[in-house]
Image (tube, helix red, strand yellow):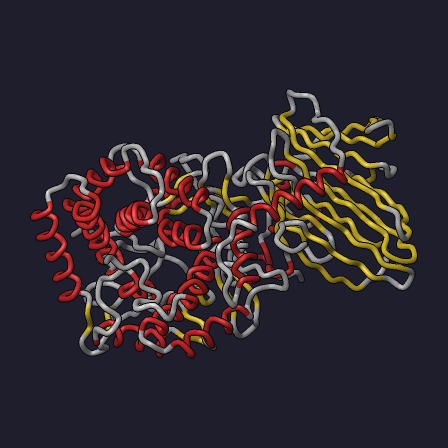
Length: 604
């Protein structure tokens, strides 16, 4: 059985594909991240769509990304020879293509290709036709598959044949030879795109990624792993709008066989500030500015209609439904498309937006039109609703509660508005907001702190711990030396840590409306390392950080969660929140000699 960490990512800035170690593309949504998949074997069986390209017999496999790129190289070694499969998607410039190049390294290797195209998440069998085409005078076999609005086109010099609704080919590659496959998407009402010059496309793609990587300003101890995470984050940005999807997948389980399976192909406000800072700290101000602009556009409108997540271009209707014909990854049902959490209320989003906008000002990003007017309106809305219950940062599907983290982020919303008035000269009712800020602060300290546990708890009056409260010192709600913060961090370390990883909360103690448990949450584990650093325990923070790096796969990719006992990644993959948290912690550790390490988010 394949594991989540067995997959690699390639992408073109508008969508992405997941490729297994054996050379099978098991997930690809076209033309966008959130479009229906034409390869859905990740959540089912090969019959639900995949493209296997591999040796015909037994082989040993190794893989890597070309340095500072998203070009994947998989090397297959057999008794008779060795070949390298290079997979990439050229950055989108009109058309969208997956290019696969097999190059002979030594001897000769018998290869096979099995292409199973199934549109609409494995449910639609397309109409397939074949013909001959030409590329710079060379004959190519061309296959076209159409169903409804979608067309995909395969071009290759290899002979193709149809069998049992699959497209098969067998061929031999010798040392020094190369065989190319071009797979392109186009709307079905338009002609297929022109063939690519594959070698030129490969050279251009490599240059594009390396030029982008050169902009990175992080040159510290963990430069290689930070760069890999930044490249992954870049691949998760929907280039037309600047929005970043939480992950490239839907319904990868947070526990194998469980029901905690969600569609993460959307943009979350909860990730706003960490994403902005990770990009800015690494020198990617253009991407940070476009992310800030996306936030402003997405939230435009009446403040009471603000959502916790949006589509790639700011779409609001993300209706959730279940696919009954897919058995799910490792038989984890249901497979969900869309996300009903977009209808939830989360007070933390107002603090996240305010924090992101304020750090954009501090970082010198060009001002966004109407950003302050919107922030002021949202702050006034927080003044009206901060006492309300909500579903919290983790989007529980149980009853709304007075979540302590939510109240804290409401405090952040007001605090950052005050700071904007004081430091940047914008207009706002400063005395009233200062009174409001103190009122929220006092309420949290009175109702959210459990004296018996010597810790802030998940919700008012509860005895349950929650890793979201590791944010208290990071956002500046209380200083790290405050005994209540220290007590909270220590309690979380005692109660929520498993084998050096932090859980979000105990699922058996929190009514989150779901059955079964989940893995440890990687972003929270990095936050714990940040708190160790803030409390002066740098060596322990480094030790934990490097321990967390061991749960990356062989290509440096992280899912949302991890099972430390089975040593398996869990949840959607690759997960932006995990990579953002890793980049942030690496930057914090490199700044550890400063007066306030890891406190960059805290208001000055």
